[in-house]
Length: 87
Image (cartoon, rainbow, N blue to C red; front, side):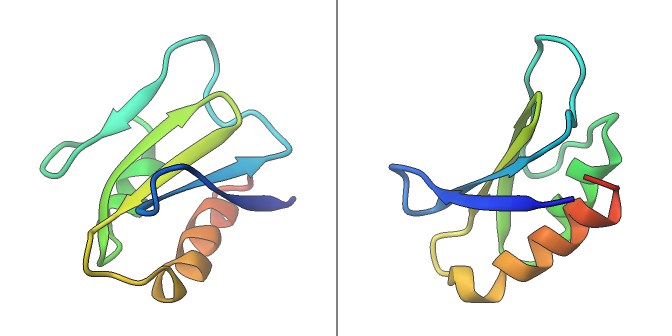
């Protein structure tokens, strides 16, 4: 399994792409602060300190961090969570 982080035009967002499908179908899923999802991987990502919201579609998850948090503190934790679900 390989999760590839990719920058986005938004400096507070990174797209994490998997070689496998994470979300079946054509519907996207987003989780905002205070929300939960039927997809446990998104709920676990929201528990990470510094994560503001998450968005998922087919084979990727985009994570938005809080403005005052550095990516250095989050990237490896995010990858660990996603990989722990087998993606």
